[in-house]
Length: 167
Ligand code: NI
Image 1 (cartoon, protein in one colour):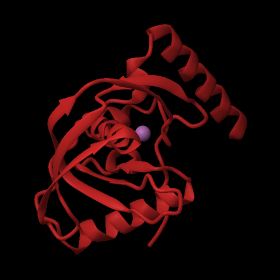
Image 2 (cartoon, rainbow, N blue to C red):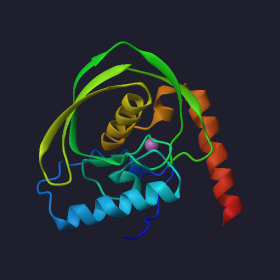
Image 3 (cartoon, rainbow, N blue to C red):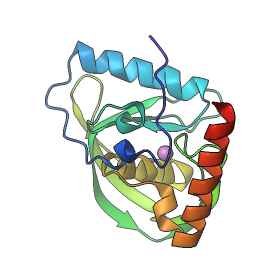
């Protein structure tokens, strides 16, 4: 396993519409293992493939407090959503920024697991928010897109400044 570098907003590569995974093979499973390692090390509760420069529809999450609930979603589809809920979100590609975002409160999702088998799940709360956030990444969408243009501009400036200081 290895830790992969994470792309940061406003990197345009995060805007890529990802293509479906056509075959769940050992190469994909290696990527999944790397993504878990990268997410846990960050640390974060979700990571989508485009965040590590792989433009395929694949994401990992673990919303447990002790890394005990790793979940993989390959080619995820939101089948149904209900209600709305406001929750504070962050993103490993937008480090240090936390803002309220409104999402569906309950979702039904279908995806393939690491063996390529299809499964369906109904979830709510933090897990539902996390899944919606990661699916957005696969469409090239970031949580800052839900904020006002002014706020997004401020975040962009802040991150660019931080980056210049680290270089
Ligand atoms: Ni994110």
